[in-house]
Structures are given as C-alpha cells and as structure tokens.
Length: 220
Ligand SMILES: [Zn+2]
Picture (cartoon, rainbow, N blue to C red):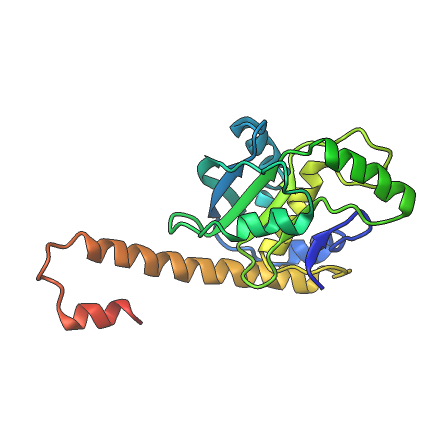
C-alpha cells in the first residue's frame, strides 16, 4: 500500500516509556531540501518543520535542517495526489540534502474535493512519502475551510510524513519498529555523512596527488 496520508491513518502513539529507555546518541541534523509552492513562504515552511523540530527533534536528537529553499510551483492541472507526487518524483535529489520536502498550497479544487470526500466518505489525501527511497515527501501547507473535521492540520501531516521518511510505517502501535527505524537511520546517516565529507576532502587535493591507495580507502 502506498504511503498516503488520509484522515483515518496513523503511525502509532508516542510510547514515552520505551522512548526514554533508548539511548538516542548524539545530536544529528538531516540536511533537507525544502520546496515551496506558490503562496508558501520560507517562514511557513520553517513553522511547519517546527512540528517536528520543536518536539521530536529533542526526543530523538534528530533535527530536520533546511539545506535550501527553492520554489516549486504546482500547476493548475496537477490536482490528484499522484500528479503532485509525480512532480516531486521528477526533482532529482541534490547532493546537499538527504531528504526533499515539498510544501504544497491547497487550492479551490482541493477544497471542493475535501467537501466531496467528506460527503462520500472517501479519504482525503493530505500528504505522501515515496515508498521506495523514503527521501521525498510532500504535505499541504495550509488548511481549507472544508467540513472534514478529521483532516489533520498541515503541521501534524508533515510530522507524519517525516516519520515515514525515517522508515516508520502505519499502525506501529507500540512504536517499537519505528524507534528502531529511527536509530537505524541515525547510524546510516552518521556513516554516510562521514564517508561523504571524506570524498569532499579528497576532491580539494590538487590533481595527481591522489594515489590508488587513497582511492581505495575512500571506497571502503
Ligand atoms: Zn502515512
């Protein structure tokens, strides 16, 4: 099942006893490329990321830090969630970031759909994470005034997607798998970033100085 966030879906409930029993290690930052739809400001994005960074970041010692903010406009013919997702899928992840998050403006069509979904009992999609790589996610940046009381706030939606980005899945009631996924991500990220900066250091060496031994060291 794709990682869509509809009103009735949840990951799990904070299990503070288990969470506190875990040694979350040192503080880490996740360099994140932030994309802004028309009408969404850098401040809006920071505020929405705050839903993670003001609470979870301290819990897990893992903060989502914007590496860049770039405009990415949703076209008026991009209405369905899979069109929005396809647009983000097409944006290649730059080396400077490990995750890509797009804050999408809700428009009048979404408002109509939200109303219709409410009447018809359909789930209203408010966010998405790519299943395959868990590097890309989007969420709406604003709420429409529809009747669907069950729709999550945009802040709660992006927080939900960030859990997915870290490898958490739905209906992990005790959060055991999710906490393990976050620890695994942190371990992976530490190794990845240290290898990555080694390559950067190697790059600044004058040409011709890199021996075969150096090159093989870097590939370990
Ligand atoms: Zn979800």
